[in-house]
Image (cartoon, rainbow, N blue to C red):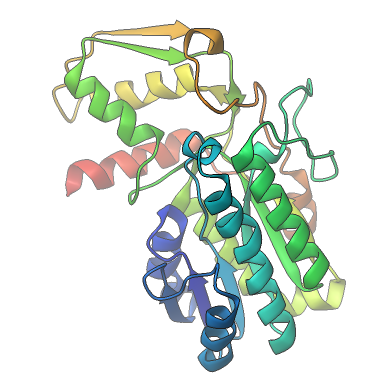
Amino acid sequence: MRLAIIGAKGQVGWELSRRAPMFGHEVLAWDVDELDITDAAAVDRALGASGADAAINAAAYTAVDRAEQEPERAFAVNRDGPAHLAAACARLNIPLLHISTDYVFDGTKAGSYTEDDPAAPLGVYGQSKWEGDRAVRRLLPRHLIVRVSWVFGVEGQNFVKTILRLAREREELRVVADQHGCPTYAGDIADVLLELVGRIEEIDARQLWGVYHYAGEPATTWYEFAAAVLERARPHEKLLARTLTPIGTADYPTPAARPANSVLDCSRLGSCFSIYPASWRDSLATLLFAIHGR
């Protein structure tokens, strides 16, 4: 299959571009330098000339706090970009797999969020992603929207890399302990998306297009995630940090509010495709091996 990957230099896009040939796919990899998804005409030209059999959108504006000061840019990338891609895919009659986020929810639910729970974003980033999801659903019947959470990977910036950097610089780290979610490895997300691409005929036949959740397990907090990062990293490098202190969200104010609970229920993906969450602890070990092995 000829597969167009948009956002190819991001955390998930990099993994997709690297892994897709192992799944037997021919890859067309575009990042913002090659394709600006906010430009509808450029999207039409690129996809129209690509000969792609399917597209995966891994491009996004992910600077949650900066989005509060740059709403126009966030909406252009996260709402308009997916709309342009979905419209082009509809004209070409090819499916689009689109990556979304746990931040479409407000975090007030007591349990984990299902695909059918109402969206109620707290900030510009979440709202822009939610409106992008809505555009894809409206414009393209053959879509898979996969919501993920707390993404970490080899490429790009993420929580794991931030904790490691700070642990090399500071004796004490203070990390929020009252926000709950599911860390998810970019490589695991890529594998799930590529498996779904390989099952498009089945998805067509069974009419399984729609929204799915995929995240690592088990649920945890940022504090517990940081503790795991430090525990796994210490045998491989000298870290200055000796104390990890749990704090509340109120002790670490940010421009954008975060959901207190963004745990995703991934059972639909399991019941439809027998695809189940990976252990984020195992995937963290894989990531740290890649970092320290470089």
